[in-house]
Length: 474
Image (tube, rainbow, N blue to C red; front, side, top):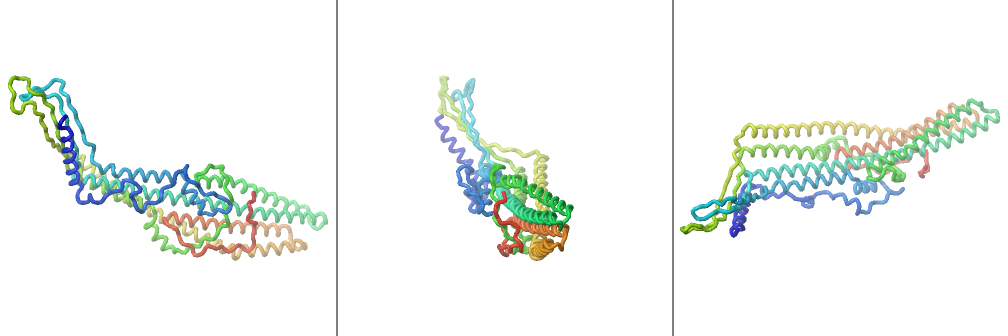
């Protein structure tokens, strides 16, 4: 035992010296061991139990909903934790294997010329071939960067889900308001019809038809009112809240005219989309794995030292080195002689690299197609907004007002009036649908290109005729 400490120091010092040589000149490039070591790392989701979340009220805008989801959604927190876990893998693969300590006790003492050997102690360190540790660190770092981009993709997807549900919830609110206004209009018309029927100025079938139309519209109102809970549950799921948590109606929705051109959006897709960035890192990682597989053709080396405790000789003779404890240096080399196995490892790495490149190419094509479709739907929604707001709704409102006057004077039929009211209702709902569709498609475009899209203006011209008072219809 008297020399064990010195032996351990010698072996470890030798191992570290050779490991420094094995790392090569690239060893100066250090890898971060934790997310805090990355300067431009995004902020982590805060602990779910220790952060005060924003309060969502009737005055809350979309920004408050997004902040709430970013702090409270468990899926986003899981994605961030996977990134942290991948980063912690880097220092593990770049470290040397643990040294091996061996203790041997001789059940039967080995008698030698200088005395009996009773026990031995050995310490060995395996050293990978030059550059292996650095390549392993490169591969692990690329995997961690891929997880980082997946976290960014999860954040963009979450924001899209919040926006999509928020705008759909808005459309439901405006639909309820619009249908309620039209129910009130039909009720007033039905009262006028009954009065005219009592005075003999209208027929009974006309009154019945108006009442049937009123019943159909009332049923439609109840149907969309019942839709509030499912849509609120959908929004709550994105926010990380219970499905039955109360959700206030959203504020008035503004039009979303994008200032970016189609060409700019298509150029942003390969530059900013986090899915493609993650696949880029996976491709680099697979290329590093090829280099690492080729390193297996070279042997790993193990260095070590052993110390044997020897008792003084019990014979009458006492040589000069009687009882001296021998110290043995050891070097072992792995022999990579199974070439077929090594060749298969290189072929496997190359095949995975090709697969990674083709996967990236395929995903880029699919995302470009999704972007083209979203652009078409976005432009179509904008066109419909202008059509209904500037042309169809004003004309339908003017026609309805004219028919109401004509009906009161007996110059128009119930059929004409009902058709005009139905047309105005459909145009008003179509306008709100187009407004929500445009906002949803803009949110999808931002998710696809991986960045915010500048808007040409944030104010929305009001439709010519208001169909609601903006209050909670419930």
